[in-house]
Length: 256
Length: 137
Image (cartoon, each protein chain N blue to C red):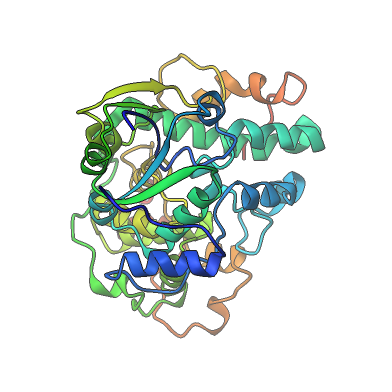
């Protein structure tokens, strides 16, 4: 008979139990407390108005509900009803709009099945297929903004959505890496990782599930990160250009 | 333990409808070693799962390959929530499975292409007519 894994007791004991049960894995303990109680506490703190205004900024009022939605601790419907109970539909609009994105991704996954790991559409630009290199995996690219994203991913299991997009664009378009290799590695670290939101977002950035590739420039990073890296960065910045110039460099045309 | 409520990692909620509807079924969760390794799950992800599972009353957690664990427990019949995660369906292929749909967020039966097309179709359902039509940008 298989032996049950005891998860009872305090959280420190539980985390240690899991660490002992998976000795091949290492790293810091999970900073997100799992479960519905934690989910409901987080839901009680959301502010859809502040979220609407600031969600694209790294220090904005993001909800961090995604790990709980991913694991069913709360449902999209509960999150929507909570927002509508506290705010008018106009004020809750953006929050509900983003909940709908999650529902859309999931419907697409159900429709695609295992094909979610392949190009949904023909790419609109030439994509690379290089495997994930060690400097990305270790967060040693020499670009503080990208390396910080890897540290957040690996150490915390959570990355702000805007930083996820920057990082995906860097890997796929600036480094010409395989979106699939990157997405497979990325999702394993995310506490909220699921193939729907993760792989389809990587495909959206790559242009295999969207009408054009997503790219960003230094001005965008500086603005939405409150200049946290750019102000002191001494790297030879590959993002320091206008969008047409970057597009020309990356895709050979100013308007892909 | 011939019939169980099988909890996979998308239904970790002590208020889940299947838990409430089946209070007498044994509740089983398996840390699927094959899937966790194949999908490169970090330690933190597995710890998060453990927090979620620990909060569900009466659930017994195991570590191993789902199909092997269930067979060793003498399981023949499973109640669970439908999921697009292929490894769950594959793991349960040798058992009699009663699949239940997950809670629906919105009613949509159109063709899935671009998000904005989907959003325009469901917006009124989700925010009402008075709030619908806002520019998404």
